[in-house]
Length: 83
Ligand SMILES: [Zn+2]
Image (cartoon, rainbow, N blue to C red; front, side):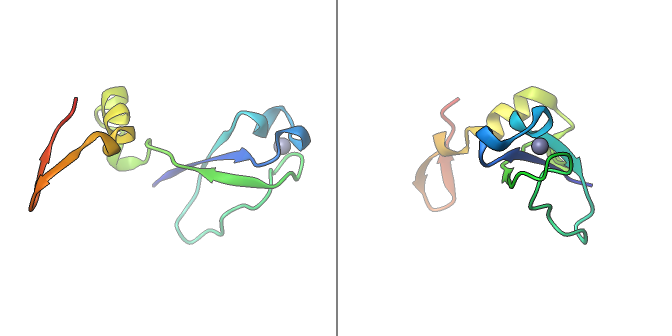
């Protein structure tokens, strides 16, 4: 089950809970929350690497996942790894 990370879209109106982001485990069928469950401030979904598929190899995998843009396309189906 994926974990979604949300953060207040307006930090000046956020509470301690949503100011720096919070994780939410939810089913795909559940609607995405539009507001902080504690203070009601509007929240935006962050790009989160710690969904099920990336949790196996921990932080290294998360870093690599975040570095997708470092892959340079060399040709058809070939990518040079910049790490
Ligand atoms: Zn809040």
